[in-house]
Image 1 (cartoon, one colour):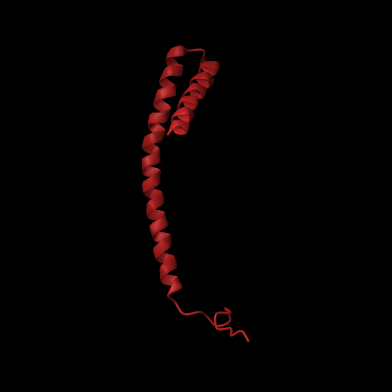
Image 2: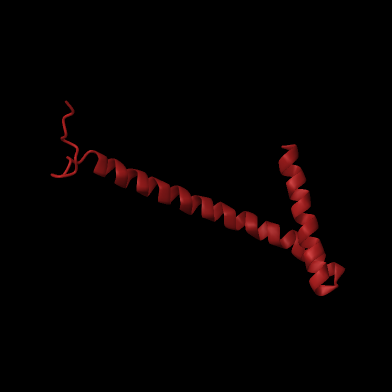
Length: 81
C-alpha cells in the first residue's frame, strides 16, 4: 500500500509540474492535477467492465471450441510408438 500511495503522490506532483510548466498558472495546474485523476478513475471503472465482458466472451468462445472434435490433419489423433 505504501508503494501505491507513494506512486499516487508522485503522479500528482508530476501532473502539477507539467501543467504549471506549460501554463504558468497555479490555479489551472491545481485543477488539472485533481480533475484528470478523477476522470481517469471513472474511465478505468468502465474500461474494467468492458474488459471483463471481453474476457468472458473469449472464455466462452474458447471453451466451446475446446469441446469440438479435432479436425482431420490437426495431429490430434497421432499415436506415439
